[in-house]
Image (cartoon, rainbow over all chains, first blue to last red; front, side, top):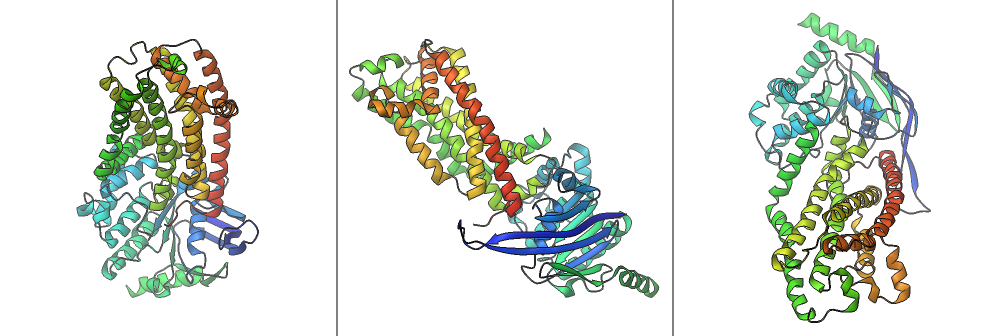
Length: 244
Length: 266
């Protein structure tokens, strides 16, 4: 069953200085199509400015597409709040949190925004913090957290409301290599494997996810090309299991 | 409710975190009260005829006007600033991903500016009363309460328009300054509109601030004769402003979602 279905999606922006008469129309996405099933992982790469983050924000219901069809777990862009409930967006951008609040206070606020409160919210925060080795940092002010800690906090926030589809935009940009490997393993085994979450990960570095059992796509000139098919990924997974 | 509580706690932490600004902003409530109290001791030697309606003296006239003005413009300047700050931090985008509609989020972002506006209003009235205990002794509270209700609705609508402007053009304060100047000059904030030349007096009649100022001043001085007419005019302004504000906000939200500018830089 497909969790994400995108058909011929286009998006253009006006670029350049604001003027009533001369504004350049740039097609960032030009007929993007993509389908992801439950429990599937995909890595989307592409050069800087290719439109990867824009695509993620469209899927997350933050940017309105120009044309095309987008269905997230049965919901279309006409009902963005339904999409927000099903999608978790994790960005490598260090912004998006309140600096003068602790990590826990931030999580309580953003949990409340998702309609979570009380023991359920505390339990989710506790579980995710334990999985992501974040427990000692919960009472630290956000502005005092290191970049790596901020990245983990963003991951916890993205997962608080238990979304079916997790969108990760350069999530490991400032995470040290050993921790990144542990997080990648956790995403693969726990989230995609056990909890059957669908993961779409964006990175401009191809090598970052080499050897990861995920479908690979490249976004180039507004179009998506699949580099490694579902079958190839399945084979990689089987080979790994055999080796193990 | 949990979101509202967490958000207000966050706002308080943020505001108190910048404690010098926090103290200065609230401290500034006291300053105009003192300045105009001593100024009025120079000018309040005789009662001009146009001042009779408002209790005769300049000080209560001014302090009531200043209280309304500070209420209105704290909301009009702070609300778009709060929204812009959330965009600049990238937190508006994070809040947008929650279960609440954009309109309810914008309204929640307006709570703190409203609290600040009300603190300004009551703070100035209290400063005035403590400096000159004889003023506002005939205050008619039902009229005053009615005026406050009108003020809240009216400036919620104008505040939403200011927020819509801030969403579309990023900064609203420059354009708001124009309205600020018009209100300062034409609405009878520092002097009654009766002393303006006749053509300019017409302009003042079209400003909601003029009627709100009159209603509050009449409420504070116990003059209830024209309260009904002023209330009716304010109701008309509100009836026009609320749907217009909703329309502006809807347009602004669609535009930033279209242009992908929920988060901004710089």
